[in-house]
Length: 68
Image (cartoon, rainbow, N blue to C red; front, side, top):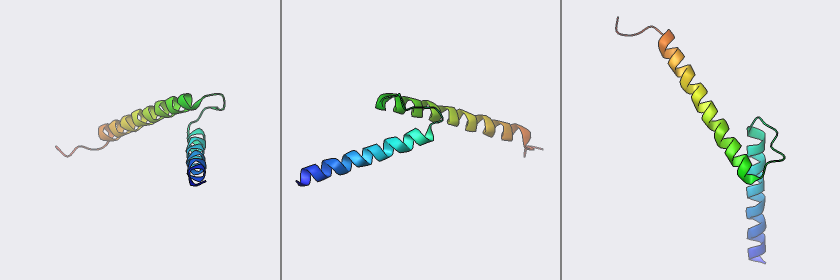
């Protein structure tokens, strides 16, 4: 009985996390399996990291330097 409850709780927790991932990635992922959701999430995180890097570089280029 205790094992069944733990298993059910773990399943609920995993399902909750998968639903959160589905909400976070900006594509329709209803047809993707679990592996596809993780792949899309990883791709999206990499894209966000690149955007942040580009923004940081632009700020560095556009801000006045301290070497004057």
